[in-house]
Image 1 (cartoon, rainbow, N blue to C red):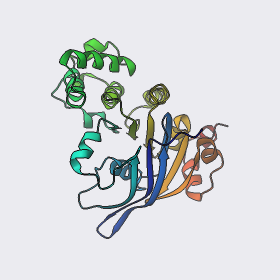
Image 2 (tube, helix red, strand yellow):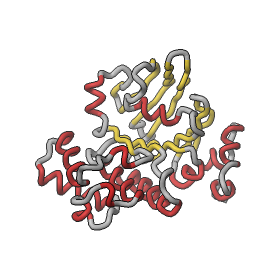
Image 3 (cartoon, helix red, strand yellow):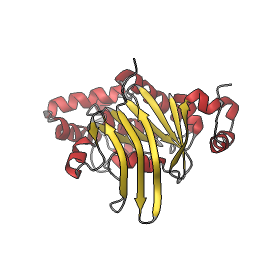
Image 4 (cartoon, rainbow, N blue to C red):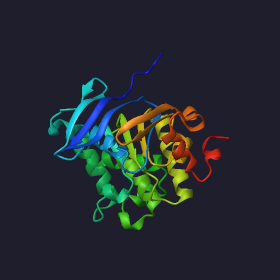
Amino acid sequence: MTTSPALQIEDLSLRIGSRQILDGVSLAAPPGEVTGLAGESGSGKTMTGMTVIGLQPPSARVTGSIRLGDRELVGLPEKELNRLRGNEIAVVFQDPTASLHPMLSIGSQLTDHMRYHLDLSRSDARARALELLEQVQVPEPANALKRYPHQFSGGQLQRIAIASALACEPRVLIADEPTTALDVTVQASILRLLRGLCDDLGLAMILITHDLGVMSAVADTITVMRAGQVVEHGPRADVIQRPQHDYTRSLIDALPDHQEAAGE
């Protein structure tokens, strides 16, 4: 039996003035799978993710369809989109400090987020925060709640940002270049964490990255974008080992060891 996508994008286009940013983008994100969205800078992959949560530039004109389950998001009023952001759809950014306030403790940030969206008591929110930090493997979670962002390494901050994204048990998680700012060893541990969370929680995850090597490690399917259009889509092994489009081949050839990325 085929599982219905948690998120379905169909013929999505975005124009700013005379410039076409997205042109007929379609993809599906099923629950329990990592859907990779790949392409070089300017390909439209990040703008696709931002348009899903309604954070495109105010002057942009959006057409097409973005469905979260049975709900159409294109044209949804800002007030309703605000209820979805951080609740049913969450985002992990490249720079974890973008989602963490430098002057507030980690405990305050996690618990305030949950109390706002889930109407939890202070004690229940703290218990949930501890649970989340354990889930993303932050050492000494009780102590971590008392500390501030500058007291953590980049990898630990990204784990905390992931914990914050998971706080309200979203159906869809958009991870936008979540490992680009980290060193190689830390990258691998964050990718393993994301893959495990997707499997354990049944998340529909969209992993946005320019690096097909990252995709080869965790994605179930890969959608390749170029100049605002989808040029290739398929199961990870097919796209990596038997690319059909010249642009996909060029991305794979640019990897430090594309034989390894292809699983050979």
